[in-house]
Length: 64
Image (cartoon, rainbow, N blue to C red; front, side, top):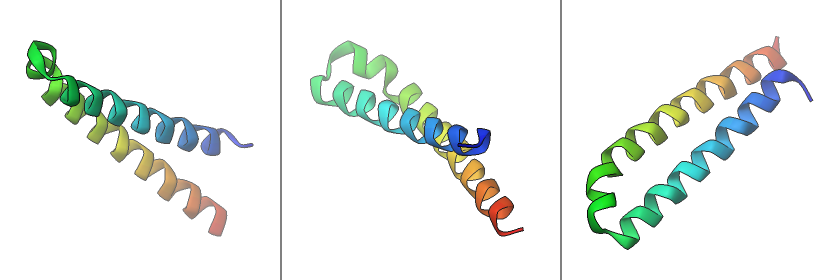
């Protein structure tokens, strides 16, 4: 397994964990959700962008 593949897999796992954390926070509600929901959303979006860019790099390098 190459370093790029490992990075893509870890980024995808981090995205799923952050998504589950945000959904759990939203399901429970309360002050924690009010305080952290926006931060969790932006973190998830950032990780998704990173995973997408790494996935594009992996596809590009495998085709070349």
